[in-house]
Image 1: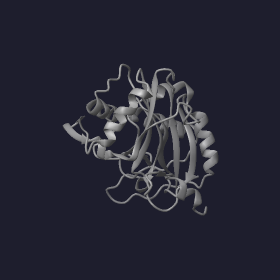
Image 2 (image 1 turned 30 degrees about the vertical axis):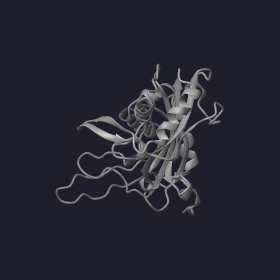
Image 3 (image 1 turned 60 degrees about the vertical axis):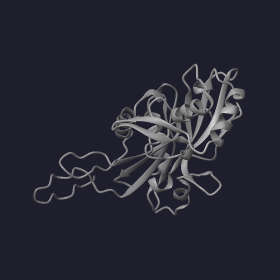
Image 4 (image 1 turned 180 degrees about the horizontal axis):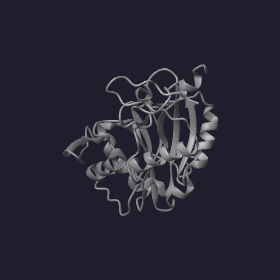
Length: 267
């Protein structure tokens, strides 16, 4: 049984054993769960980790909280196949067992894809962009194509983003990587969550590789930019799914942020 650290003068007792390792989890947000806020997902994950018996470490102080670090959560309304969470634990654990146990305890719409033992370096330093699949019901590919050409030809495309500090201009063209905005064949990606796919008959699909700017450029900002440069109107809400996060290389491709952890020697 884990023992608690002795409290110093003026300090609250620490109810948790020390952190001995970190696990990094990739998980998905699918179906109706895409409408859950990040706060809802975080609370659900904390409850699920307790139910699965994962020995999560707690922070110090008078209000200890689980040592969980969330990396670049997808906006409410967007699905994702590439959400990341770092978990401080008080025991050395088998990551594959953790993945199975947590996945079995999660509610429908949330799913664990992979868990690895964290290697050296910060996970946040390995993520600076996202790849999005954007589906446009009512706007087929033949109408998307000229709008994409106009967007890529523009030196800048500024839209107004409403933030908690008021409206802010956002250059979406600068946020989209090169080539960064392309039409996607209807049969890709192959591992798509079918219940999140719109009918193909009159639905265009485009892939957008977007840098993590401040404020962040979201899929709806990309659509607003297409509307501004080409007068493109979207008769139905677009549906966005994040398929990857990572660091952009010199070819404009994303490097898997867990690649180095898989390659690191295990204790």
